[in-house]
Image 1 (cartoon, rainbow, N blue to C red):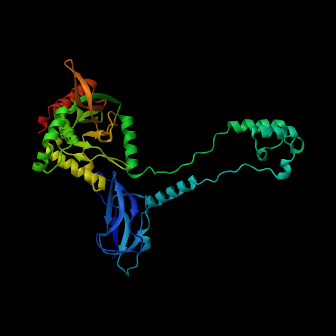
Image 2 (cartoon, rainbow, N blue to C red):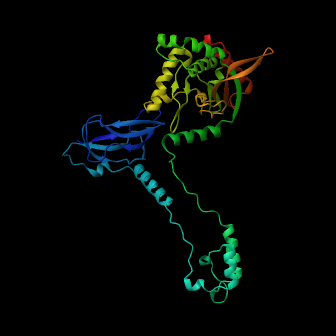
Image 3 (cartoon, rainbow, N blue to C red):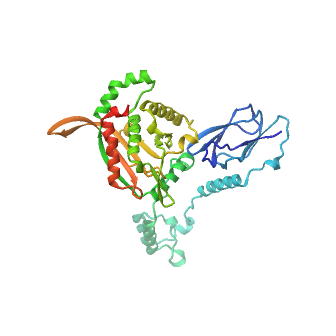
Length: 402
């Protein structure tokens, strides 16, 4: 009996998935749970496996197809079973996807229109003055149509051709590579455009003196690693400090919906992880209730999953506040885009040793810039400044973190 392979629902919010690639072809024999295809949804890739052993008799969704959850993408049969082809025809949605892709490919391959060439005998019908002028102005005589007696090319024809040449745009640009806007990059593009359109944003930048945090981490790192089995990073410390600050300033942990500012009960912090082809934001749930070391273990686990493509859709959902840290890439200051529909995002720069004037003296301190971008529809500058200062106060007295 034929067994269908369907587009799985891999998370509560998943509505459709994209066929990234097929790992088998029609006619291949597969075992139960053998990898069949690579699919992508919500910036995460998964392998679809065979529900039963048999022969891959029909592939219904070509690579690049966007398929709703629950739709059949392939059929597996017993070795000698005859498939009812009519019962498993590609869906209209898949057919339209293929047709659109083929149309686009045809449109992109357009033959260049060569300029009309004038026959050799016609090129000879030109006045000496026009020939000399053409040479002087760099006009190709084979492209000039004569308007003199009998089609003879005259001086005015050369002048017109020269003027037209100057007005013509330069030749078309050539592309070295074309990257389709699909999958993860498509999701990022859509969400960034949505954020830009719906969140009138303001950026505020403040400095945190990380000297004591650096000193504490250097002193305790080996001890913490031995006791808790995890290597605490500065990012872990920032996540914990931010979660504590959100308890005091809950308006920062909010969204706007249906004309209301809605403050979340849970503090679920998304941490942006840079990948080769984009950005992904796994979520640390209830970060305010977790210890620094629990956060460190979770960020390590989520980062590894993100970079190996093993995150589940549910690990990307439910964020209420986002932190993006580019300090490790040498960035000091930047203005991140709000992770819509959240209202606030924190951008973290690198820790830099610099001279600081205090009480009439000059001291070398470890300074880190915090860039808070917020939706001005929901929050204003003064509360954001107090919220940011609360994060700074915690980081500058880092024993509060443990």
